[in-house]
Length: 183
Image (cartoon, rainbow, N blue to C red; front, side, top):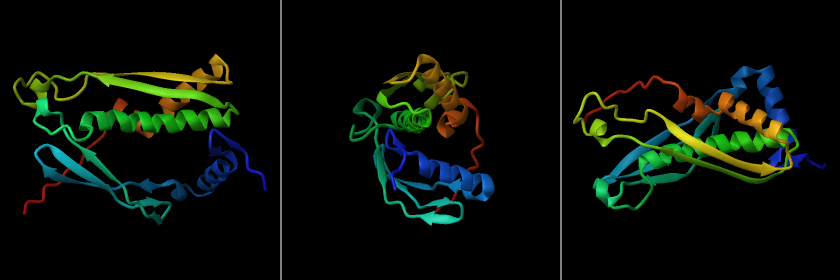
């Protein structure tokens, strides 16, 4: 059987996933798990745990390292947490652009997202309580090209901003429920 594949996205399989979730919303519930361990100085290694999707466990075995540059007391051995945050947002939005273009029958020639943000270390270091420890804004530019029209790409762009989980997570406050376990 010939599959309908655009930009590496199997549109028939995507349609099957959509129909399954429409029939049973529980099939669309997904839980992600990450455990991060300190490796010394400013370094960490994060281990991706299994994903639970629609009640099914999907084995995952990936690690992501993080570190700070030497100027921020690290060893400059890996991206820092801010770069990983932006990378995660970009990767999540990329999925939306690729799938959105595929659903419109648009073959992409180029897709690149460049993200930047500036924060004030006085907030992180607790030097000035009026300075927030994070970003006031994050700026990004999407460079996209393919056989679609400008209007189609604008529609896909609006859809990504409305449906990307990591765009949503960064654009709105989310509740963080922390528990401290000592020992």
